[in-house]
Length: 147
Image 1 (spheres, helix red, strand yellow):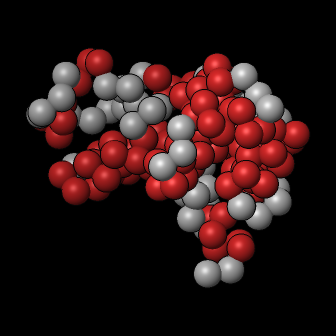
Image 2: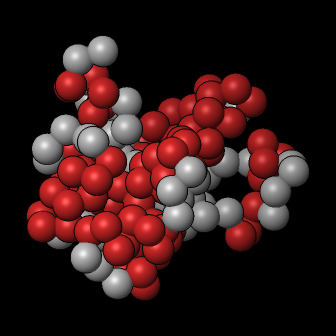
């Protein structure tokens, strides 16, 4: 797998999740990683928990310790931040329910669905179970995906 394909396979994932997975695979504790990169354990924990982003310096240190390609984690951080910003830029109506019959989401409390956060699942559900008007509405609501 080439480098670009490798990065694309993790596109939109917080680098902390990737680091956490690598630590588990290698049986390395967060504290041990923190000591090896000269950082406070709380900082590493905050990155893994998604409460904090990576800096270029820390990215390089972690990459060196985990034998990852230089810049890989910082690219993941950038792609994750881009994804987060794009979600914020969804139409203002994304917080309100689109014109879809609640029965399409019979197994959920329709009034408490987070339309922005569960976009992919919602689209999939409407495409599987909705009528033609609802399918058109969901495309209008979220905007058609540009290829």
